[in-house]
Length: 599
Image (cartoon, rainbow, N blue to C red):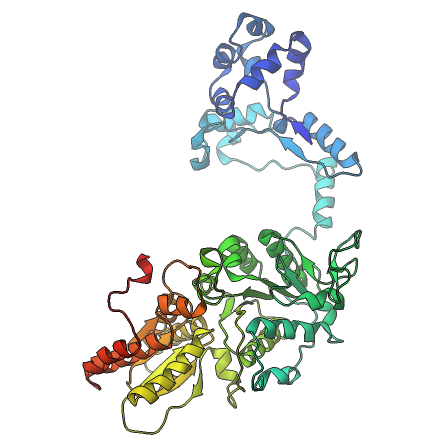
């Protein structure tokens, strides 16, 4: 570390000081006092810094202007050059230069070392004149009000040097690559195994589905080398240990130790040619890795396909500023929020249980976000995302939530691909009876509770339900708002319909939506739902318990979905209110139960 603190003008005083009193005085002061000194004048510094007879004797033959000119190292060209020269020529270690500078340097009485310097919009004529004199700028008094640029002669060494450096950086205007060579993105048929039912008794999680997709891509002869799996921690939790053996963990030094699990098939293998980036418990570092890979098409002209997988509570919430910066840089890639939802990772409580990351994702204009339930949804979304980002080269990136809950996965409804991508598809149609009817919507793990609620409604109350999977309420609201805007700007043309309106149709039956996220997530589409609309969500703090108890606590399980549907029908006058009360008794739902938001 090179400390660049005191400027050249102090050197004479250090030579005079034979007792170390100057250094002692410097160490006594705090930064705020140093700031005050530079906001005053030489007389003030003489009185308050050189505040003993011995110290004052050091500058007895100096004028107040000379005392005032005692400078900081970060503004002294000789000290700066010496520090950088030492840093550049030091080998074998990284070098840090710690430079001390002054806020508003050069502004003089208009703001130098003053807290107001950030609010100053311009300098008055006298301050400009003092600036000119202080830095010996060759501008005549008559030209000061014009604030002319200082132009170096084109044949001067300074001009030639700056032009050479500018040319080395790519020219006078900043530019970025908007495209690189397109990648041969696999067709959806490559993931055909995920589009089929998992099979009776074969349970798996959506986390396993996304890892399976990553493994398939890594083995792809055309784009396998472009895939960048990134994980900050818990690789084995996400089922990624197979990648250790398959492609290895990248380490520029290779593996210099025997790993604890070396005798296992999937041991912790580091390699100079590895592809997995394992950052330890360092979400900011992993996000920086992801941004580097996600912008490689622009920086290096080579497209990479980064998958950054982490606990969803530790992704957007912890690194939201980097997520926004990634969007601003037109990053392309996949952020995977693992163990997502507020009730899916039982036993981890407030630390892990995420009920709002999808709301955060929707704040980022070019972030496309999904909350899939089944492996076929994951496959359709991932394949279409690759098409958009790496074949069509759209400036978007994806946030996909996945869960660690294992269950059987059905086959994809025929022809559902396009609707899945739009954010809502018909999963199952209710019976054709003329009795009471509702629409049920859901996403993530809670969609399975919605499906179960449809069975309860039919079996216990004679209510038919049309069931809709909604892997992205965020995409639905963006579509609806886009349609509203189009209709606003085309008043003489036939109004368009949002995707939600097309899916639900003109029937005004009540609609109930339930997710593992706060109510606001599903509530966003309310303007596009005709008829009564009820949303259930996990508002409140996460907590530790079983999934079943958590879903009851947050009032999003099958019984609460059933109750909400019956209450909506009663409010419409379709059924008697006694049925709602009977359902509370049947399902043991306590009317005195506290609001989850208040606990």
